[in-house]
Image (cartoon, rainbow, N blue to C red; front, top):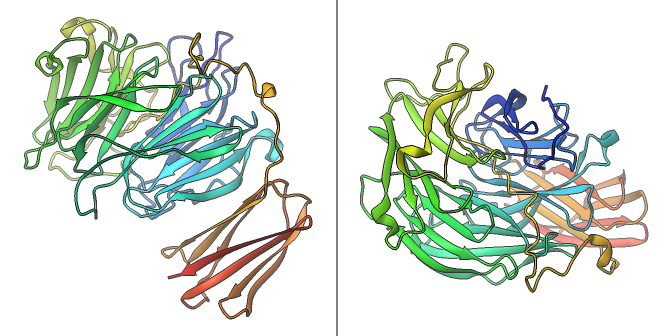
Length: 492
């Protein structure tokens, strides 16, 4: 379904998005293809070192709920265990990060924007299902607060590890916040780093993050009119030096800054805005002394029936822009019905020369045909998997995973209970053996569930339906390979 070519590969060269759309950049010029994605927004994908598709994922706004995420294998079939993954059908709530400790496994991180599951991850092992991959751990919780619809991964300056950035939502908070939560993903696992308060107070859960091609600059834009630039240190993971291009508005009308993307040099920043009566595309010169004064309107179109969405710099260094079609009376339509095929949702718009000022950037609306597929607002939130190490920097000290001493990992048991689904998501890692026993006890020690189980070491995962249990505290025990793990959880 997706053609590949014998040219230098990029691990983010295949995009799967929209209504069964796909692009393959392996040959330099993108080639349209097909995927199993049906998503108004969030989608991610990753290829192997040869540029061949490994797997992809999306959230499905049609199903809703806590766990609308789906993971697809390279044959475009649902991966084993790939259903009911954390995600609530927003626009930038997922990202895939290779596991630095194991070149056959991958993390899929998700943030909860509408529902308070916070930050979760699932683990995909590509050795499962004959090389098609299987989800070995699912919906493991790292944070439990509402989050902003933005998650960003940046490769560490050592060329192996990864930084993950998320922001807490202002929804339900007594005041707006400007907090950043960084995580380090390394061979030793996932490490929460000290949080940092920096920048303007954010007033909305609707926002996105973008990063420059060298990973040194981050843009945060939100629906309330805020556009800010930050410096990012790939060695330390520290965010610094805020530059507010446009401030957060406290009263409307709001410009609804939807998405942003940097040109290859990092000089020009492009920002989309979508609100009645106009969708607009702007350019800023970030090298100017007064960035705000360089704001240039490149294009606008009426809303309805068209609304501009995500911007993403492609492997060919052009910037691609999605656009959704909505009904002329303003009615929201997702998913599209079988008649809603229009030039505006069957094509992507393209900035052909992003490092040129003003109209010289050669923006061409609705100019790239998707081969009969359709787009909504989202494009893949794929980081730059091929970003090299910072040569000559203090953190450029690693040349391969084999240089890191291997430490014996201790087993871990995770239990997350979803009140909506009345299900306990049970995950364990670093297990020995191939069989074990799962038991659940109530608070006074009564056995309420027991199961002898088989698993593929070192992982164990189970979705345990608990509709028959009363509210209260319970204890999960997992015995495997001479190990006994214990975890408490509460049925609400």
